[in-house]
Amino acid sequence: MQAAGVEHVFGVPGDYVLGFYQKLEASPLRHIGTTREETAAYAADGYARCRGIGALAVTYGVGALNVVNAIAGAYAESSPVVIISGAPGIDEQRKDPLIHHRFGPFSFQREIFERITCASAVLDDPLTVCRDIDRCMQAARHYSRPVYLELPRDRLDVVGFQVPALEIGADDSDPGALSEVVNETLQRLDRASSPVILAGVEIHRRGLQDILTQFVLNACIPVAATLTGKSVVGERHAAYLGIYEGTMGPDAVRARVEDADLLLMLGATVNDVDTGIFTAQLDPARLIHASQDKVTIGHHRYTDVRLRDFLATLCAAITPHACAWAQRVPLPELPAAVPGKAMTITRLIASLNAALTPDMSVVCDVGDCLFAALDLRVHERTHFLASAFYTSMGFAVPAALGAQIALPGLRPLILVGDGAFQMTGTELSTFTRLGLDPVVIVFNNHGYSTERFILEGPFNDIAEWRYEHIGELIGPTSGYCAKTEDGLEDALRKALSTTGRPSLINVHLQANDASAAMRRLAQHLGSRVYG
Ligand SMILES: Cc1ncc(C[n+]2csc(CCOP(=O)(O)OP(=O)(O)O)c2C)c(N)n1
Ligand SMILES: [Mg+2]
Image 1 (tube, rainbow, N blue to C red):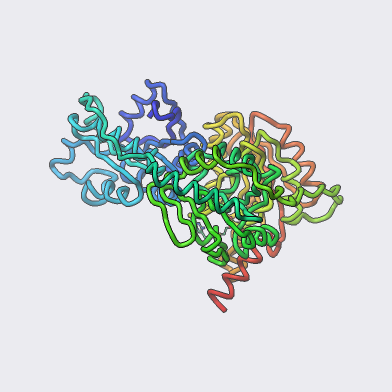
Image 2 (image 1 turned 30 degrees about the vertical axis):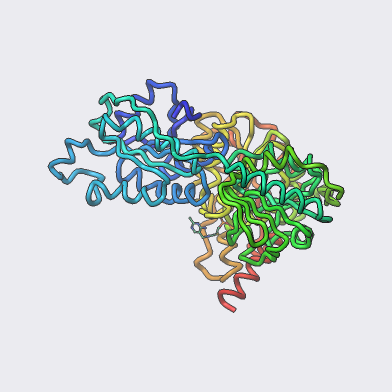
């Protein structure tokens, strides 16, 4: 794992994994204890999105089953996380005893994880163990998805045989297909008068952000991003148009993307989030779509062409396009705060845009903060991390923990709804313990607003917490309550100048205040589901 780039392993101990924890302590890897296993998995996911791989170690049954949702999310969102689970010893299992944490045949746990990982192994055989570990680590990188390693506790001291690793399969492009598809793309780009690039999440997962930026510079073509791919290109770059999300995204971006006479989709996935519940109007005849292993042009397809090779070859061969960069919509100046004026979500995002600095990443939860974040512009070379496709509430606070440990130079700005904060916000405790200093913005709209906008009912009400007092429970944390424009400015200024401990701002919003994107979504879902 260390060779693959892992320096930290998240998790909660338990007797089936204690022996491994002891070995971990004696190794160069550092264990980061979390408040529960699910948050360890989100943290490992956040770490993996920043470093290229992340890891967690948990105990059998109770620990491992606690990470199923978060790992399913990592699988759905292509994040390479290594799950190590302790297990009853092989000798212990032989007599089929009823031992604690057991919930059926001993194989059940592996069978569950087989469905949500791209490779798995039970490390019970010294003859194959090294090859199995190598195979899983290779698979995690190759497929950019989680892998599962089960470690029977009585096999910890067994010495494995070093066997050469098996190669997972060729990772190169077919040279003939590559040159043909690049030539056809160049010709089409040459003929186009208003081409646009739409960049997506696979650019991030394959670490191609720098080549993409270079390509945008070389080609002189404006670029939009999908929501799941947000921040693959610096959002303050002159060529950046904004987020495209069908009818849910800003109209100006939608017009540029849908009216382009050639749309070059790079690593963009076609899911309901990124297409605004399939409201995207993208004409296949004007489309070149490069995904991880193939490029589709109009109605024909080149297989065995890797995204990396396609982009790199195109980048080297492209000549600057005649069309100027976007008539870019600059960030509007933030009007001075009006003392006593109640906060709105629009004002909140505008204030955050003004406050963001190049040394901050943004980690965003599900809910209106995610929709509102469409209008947030992160800086060059930083990250916007979110569970934007799988959309599991509770992702942001723990994922930011992994992100800040992976990249200590980037301070996370965490955007989280009050409902989602109640799920995993107590993980802030671990930041406090480690002296890390995220700035948490609780979008406190008094309940499950996203659901309210689809169908109102008492089931969307939640308890009103005094979030800013969390420090009294978890230790040094600066808490602020912001109800007005000037109150927020004041709190943001104080939070940003406080380092070495988390800051949290409880921003009070009206329950019926919603971002423009959420209004569009609610209107669409409402009419489709209930209309
Ligand atoms: C783990 C999980 N449970 C339930 C949902 C369904 N869900 C989506 S948004 C939402 C409400 C989120 O509330 P909050 O965090 O306060 O954000 P808001 O919508 O109020 O902005 C719910 C319950 C989900 N996405 N994830
Ligand atoms: Mg809420």
